Length: 157
Image 1 (tube, one colour):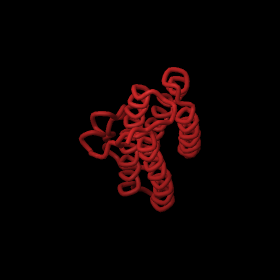
Image 2: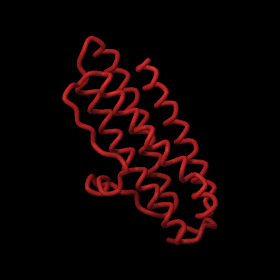
Image 3: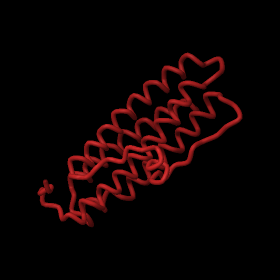
Image 4: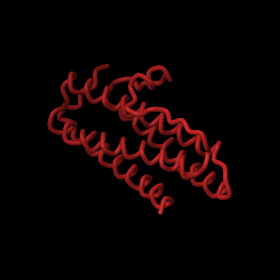
């Protein structure tokens, strides 16, 4: 059944594609954060292990919200690793050391990349695609990532 919520089908398609790109970014960030959780080493292991766990739980919730927003708009959420790798704006990080500072810097860079991408597109959702709901949704996600980035940044002081 067609989604009839006052947004043109072409715009719904554009919004869904953009949200699937975000979904891909969130999955890559989730895996990066899981990697940090599993592989961090050093004298601060336990505190960082728990910190990264808190962060990946937050990202899990974001992933579910983004996928459900895509479905709300009448489209399908991307759900394959191959699809995520094609759609993401992020790259998988590699490192020689598994210290907390290296993981934090890498995760911070990914959060900041997502924040910038979201900020650049907030107006597009509302003005170009006539979807104030997704614009509002994206604003909330941006604020969540800003807080998560602040938490990471605070560890580098």
